Image 1 (tube, rainbow, N blue to C red):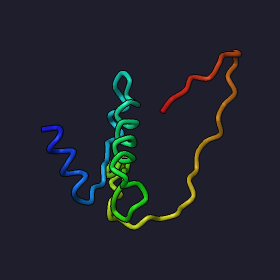
Image 2 (cartoon, rainbow, N blue to C red):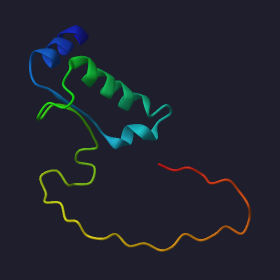
Image 3 (tube, helix red, strand yellow):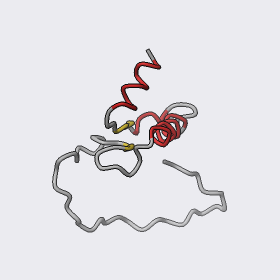
Image 4 (spheres, one colour):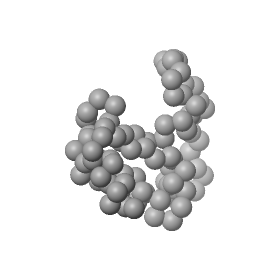
Length: 89
């Protein structure tokens, strides 16, 4: 089945996509790297309507016009103790 699926990807134009929720699991970055690697092996990156994409539909913006509005937020507060920052995705 995997070989048949691979041939279908190769024989016709394909765009691969992954949802952002995959990163919420242990080693969650691996599916994204695998997706990019597969798109590179298929030779589809950079071709119109092909290649790969991440998070289509996550922000409910597929097909909607994009509005360039400024984003506002509160300034970050300085911590009262000297601790290293905690990275978040």
